[in-house]
Image (cartoon, rainbow, N blue to C red; front, side, top):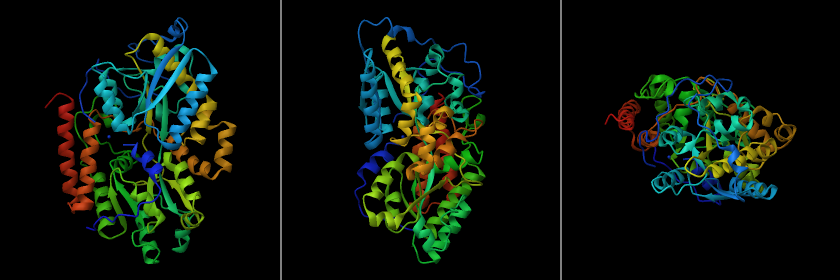
Length: 478
């Protein structure tokens, strides 16, 4: 086992804020009416007969302007874009006034949200990380946006099948708007060339990634060619892409997950791959929540994994220093998989309508979300905020297509957008109640392997047992 090396601090506060905002508070089982889970049949399916009504007409009957609040996690550039969008919306009409409030990271916001439920001091729209969707629904505090979409004639069937499938719980589609991202490979084209590798042919699998790292070190270009933070996002994406569930009932999509499936041959192979990369000195390993793996690209490392949501900030950071831009010359490629590249799960912050407020405020929340979903705002959300489109009419708009073809950041984001659009509706990602506990368990198990020298197979076995206990507690069995 190799000790973790730190990297020098650089002016990356903005990058840290964005990357750290993607991250896991208290775990509790169902509190509201329990939603019956079943396999999604896609955006063309009939909604549940239990789909609640959305009071869209209440805005017309409101006595004066309706003031609403949105809680969000967007930092730096995306936060500025969101603020500008809210101002534009407020100035475009006089029926609704939106106030957007930043509430820290996903974990910090969710903790504040759950703490505010007993006193009903809740916002009207709230951004919740994709992984917490079942816990949010079980809490009974949000209105499925599909009810508002159908009541107002919104094109539900235009949502990408993979995205729709992920958020289709109980034959109800829940988020009103999304801040969607995708994991990608970022690498130094100049260092690839220095190592004699083709920068236009980056690794597409874990085996190819290791081979590239070995070639880079053998060429004397880097001592630790690959850098990575030890977060559950990576093994979970590798497993989803390979079609390997982490819980029973087809990853919790047929009915509620009750049994862990984390201990399986693919998970063990992934842990062994990580352990071998670290033991052989090919990987700089950092803790979950750190951005040292990205900052390392400005120094010794050559390849890493990151979120597409950070691309605009990374590009601005690199462009601020001509020497850095020449040395790094970042390339972007699809996420390397176990068997093939580009196979990912749905990753996004979802904006949900809170059902605890008055009918006119719920109607106002949907009016703002509906406006955000329009092509013009959605294109801006991608170009300026780095958040991916999840509807074909947005992705195929002339302005966005030109951005993908002509802009350097746009070309990088198009790689991520293609991955999201191609998510398999049959395996969009696991649906897990105790996701916070699951995240902590997996992160700790990964860190035990690379920082403490734990046996990979034992670490997987112990993580599986701890995850099973969390599932039992969440489902009322312990």
